[in-house]
Image: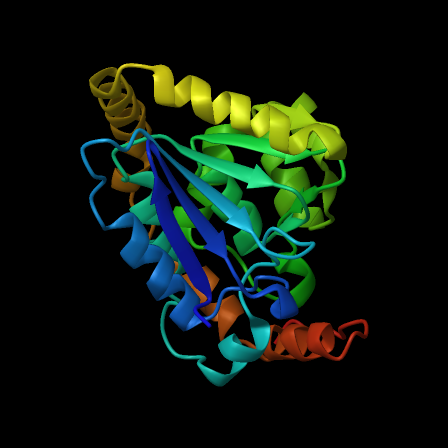
Length: 251
């Protein structure tokens, strides 16, 4: 069974993260499949793409067991998210359950997020001895002010969808029982809009937000890599997998 399933029904491309037994955690194969989906150009009748998660969780982030067994180099999440960001049509994330770490980034890289009040969002990397790349942190700063970004990144605690909505980080909120109805109405509204206008507007917004890519950040990349390859980083992932509190030593 594929870890990513997708289909096109009329104007809508629906993409399903399908690893419910792993809380839809992202391993290398899953990220490659997601990237391939969003690098596949839309057909002439397509107007909008939708990302969903199977099971009770939208996406728990990177698969830590996979990451521990594949420690070298980038994980591939940046390429996957870039493909979503650059997809020419609007992308709607329907978040019914938790979106944590890489799952939080996946949701925020959607153009519109419709979330259940039962969902939580957060970046737990500091709690496992890791740090987001420049690309990932840039998205947090695009949707949040620096004070909110520091709260999300430095504390690492998951926040209720209602708080994310109040802070303006996600666009739509619904009661769990009303999520599907609310999301369907938004998807239909997008599908009814002029496709050339949607493509132009998404390209405008994406291009204007890319200015941060040109800021020198090699020294920051080095700090992120140091955290990722540190003993603390290995300890944090072990502790999370073993469901215990990590013991960090700054090494």
